[in-house]
Image 1 (tube, rainbow, N blue to C red):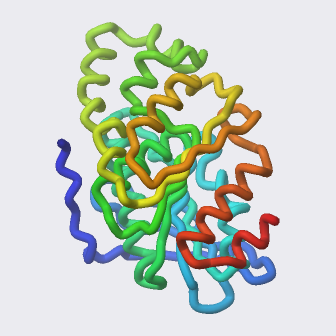
Image 2: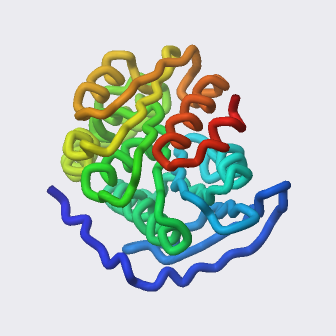
Length: 264
């Protein structure tokens, strides 16, 4: 297994710049040191008072803004949200490692403000969250949206036009060496160790990037307690039922009942 140990008490060197205020919520751009590599940037969404709980969000397809509306609702309910994105760089191993460690450094940031945290990940963010779930016991629960067994499987098997293009454009030896390098970080090696942390899996029936078979395989890899929900949506799940399901799940495990109420 890859060595993902890090110094959790290392200084974050956090900088925060307010960008907007909403009733009960302050939205700021933030930047802080990662455990390795580039600095982490994102949005920090804070409540009016002391946070009752916190959530690290990591989106891939829609970037740092992907979960921002939900982070605002979280703050209105008394929580604090940190919105990050999957780290993109040409070095795929570095991209994975820095994304995983960004979630964990985000946990360091939130745990300085509250004692109850969770993590929500989308796509590549869900796979990074799965790695964290297997090695970091500080999270009360995880929500994994349109994840799968790992990025090596995605790059090898996906019929998404973008991934097909990547495969076609790389020399075979480069493609195979890249997959061999990232395979040890695949979610399949970590998600089984997440138990007994509660997991909510959210899948899309019209997802051209993650098939139903891949979704079912991923869900089967996890231990209990776990739940799965399916939605009539594409890869970016925009079904309001998905937002409500997430809110109820987080509200239950973070003891934040007002969050569920805000989503009906």
